[in-house]
Length: 322
Length: 292
Image 1 (tube, each protein chain N blue to C red):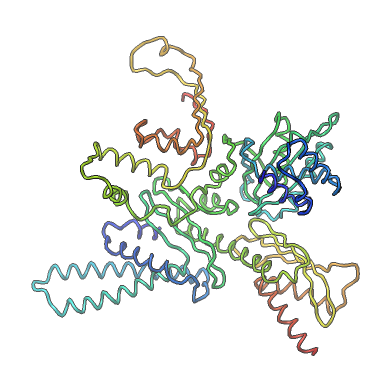
Image 2: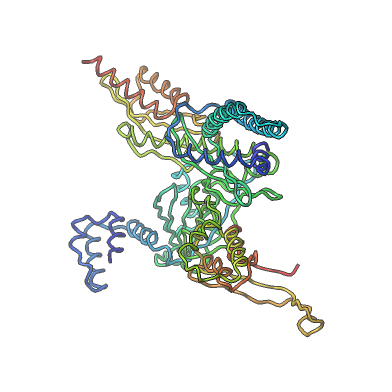
C-alpha cells in the first residue's frame, strides 16, 4: 500500500490533501473508485494516465521481461549533436507518420535517461492502452531496453524509430533478456563493479584465509587444503570479488553431433546433428554458478560457456557443430 | 608502451614498486584539492617523461649501490650513514613523483591479470570524478572491466590505439574524460549557482555537448531575455565550438543591446560557462553601485 502511495506521490497529479482523504485499507474496488473520482475532479487526461502507467512501471520493472537492443553508427560519422528534446520529437514524429493511431508518452529519468510508453493501434482498431510497450534509453548510448506486452509485430517500427531518432544506422537485438533491468544495464554498460577501492583488494587470498583460521579450533584440520585454495583462487579470478548482476536463466540451443569415446554406437553414426535445449534457471544465476566450484559440485574452472555470460552480454546461446 | 614496461618489470625492481604503492596510498589519503591548475597536454606528457626518467634513474642508482656494496671489502660506516641520507632524499623525490602522477591524473595498480588504471578528472583546479579501466594483459590486450560512462566512445578509442600504443590510448581516454567532466562541471555550476539568471530549465544531453538555456540580463534598468545554444563539436574540448545567442521576444533589440548580444556570444566561446555568469553578476553589482 505504501508503494501505491509512493507511485501516486511521484505522479504529482493529485494534491496532498486529496491523497489524505483516501483510505488505503479499503477493498481494492472501492479504493479504485475513490481514486477515479478524485482524478476526474482534477480533469485527468489520457496523457496523465499514460504518465501514471510509466511511473508504475518505473517502480515495478521486475514485473516485465526486458530485451536489450544494440545500435551502431556508421564508422567515421559526425559527433552526435542532438539533445533529448530533439530525440523525443523525432521519435514521436516517426511513429505517428507510420501509424496514425499511436500514443507516445515520455518521462525523463536520472542520468539523461528517458522512459517511453507506446500504446499501439491500427487503422481499424483503437489503441490498446492495456498492452503498451516500454522503452528505456540513455541518450547518446547505443543501447535500448525494450519490454513488449503482446505480440511483437510492432518491433521493426519501434526499432526503426529508435535508430533514426538517436542518429544511428542499424539496430540489432542482443541475445540478452531478463526481468532485472538494473542488471541488464550493469552488464551492457560493463559497470557491475563501480568501486575501485574494493576491486582487487590489497590483501591476498592467504591473508584473508589466515584471518578465518585464527578463529577456528586448532584441532580441526582441512583436508585437501591445496585444492580448495586453488578452486577459490580460480573462482575469484573469473568472477571477481564483487556481487554479480542478477539473471534468472541461461539458455543453450545445441545442434551438435554426438561425440563418444567408445567406437561405434548408433548415435555416433548419426549424420544429422542432435538438437537439444539446455536451460539453467535460478533466482540469481551468476551467484549460483560462482558457488558451484567452491561447493564441490563442479570442477574449477567452469566451462567458458557459463562464465562468459556477463562479459559477452548474452544469456541465449546457439551452439553448432563446427 | 613505456607505462606498460615500467609496470611489468616489477620482478627486478621488487622493493621500489612496493614502496611506491605504499606511498601512493598515503597520497590518496591526503587533501583532495589540487594546488596548481591542471596543465596542458604538452606539460602532462613532458611530466610523464620526467617521471619515467626519474624512476629509471632511481632504479639504476639502487642497482649501482648494490653493486658497490657487493664489491667493497669492508663495510664503510660513514658510507652507510650518507647512504641513509641519500635514501631519505630519494624517498622525498619519489613522494613528489607520486604527487605529480596525481597531477597528470593517471594512477595504476597491478592486478593478477594485468593492470588497473585509474583516471582522475579535474577542471581548473577542482578534482572531479574518477574512472577506472581494468586491462588484461594477453594477446590481444583487452578491457575486462571499466567504469567509463557508455556515451564516451571507448570502443572507438580502443579500436584505434589499444593494441598498438597503450600510452596513446590512455592519454586519449584521459582527454575525452577530462573534457566531459569539465563540460559537466560547468553545466552543473550554472544550474547550481546561477539559477536566478535562468528563465527556464537548462537543457543538456549525456555528453554535455549540447547546452540550451534561456537567461535574462539586466543593465541600467532594462532587462532582456536571451536564448543561448552552445555546441561542442569536438568532444575533447571544454569550450564550445559554436555559440548562438538570440533575442527572445517580439520587439526588436536596440543597438546597444545588439552589441551586448554579440559580446555574449564571444564570451561563451572564450570563457567557462559559470565564469561568464559570474561576470554578469559582478557587472550587475557594479551597475547597482554606480546608480546609487
